[in-house]
Length: 221
Image 1 (cartoon, rainbow, N blue to C red):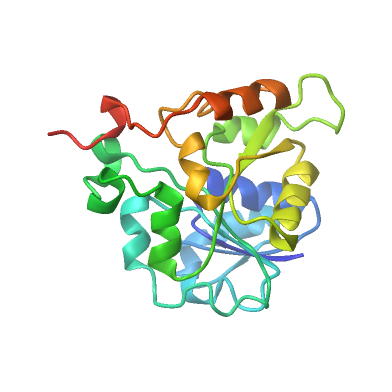
Image 2 (cartoon, rainbow, N blue to C red; image 1 turned 60 degrees about the vertical axis):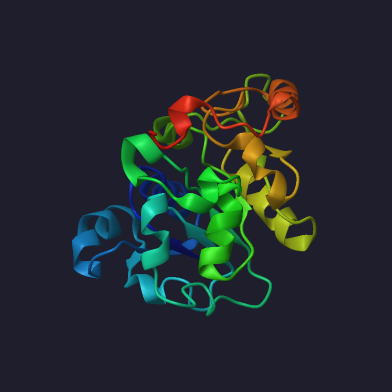
């Protein structure tokens, strides 16, 4: 696939490495110029581009940037992707640790719903709860007893199937996290977040989640 990645931090950079190794045609960008990604480009074979160009003609787009920076993205940042191409977003809202208060999220909007509203496109939430080193090094073949499961939240249909297939190709078990409106089930502070659960435990943790945001993951009063 032709994959555009917006964001080259721990998760975006790791996905660049993993996806190029699997043979995908990756274009990667950050908030600066393509020249600042020369080392990553040389290492992986990915093409470094400006963020506004990452989604052009892509079969799939990945958005992996700090939550507070989402409103700064160019209008229509993912609009040049192919018709029907899914958009993955890996973000987390860290109000005390990094992002400051985002009123809509503080008032109950699911983090990924907010991202979708900001960029004007539906998204799939995945890769937000796995440590980047495990994403890089802990892939397992399908059927392995200790294979890590990753929840995927978003609209059912062909696009979700593409995301499931990508997660599986990367060496993890995709688990249905429900609709995008239910993506709060895998936000920071929920039972599944940051855990390397297998499929059964991940599904159980998703079912046990509540919408109440714990004090650690709310803006300081």
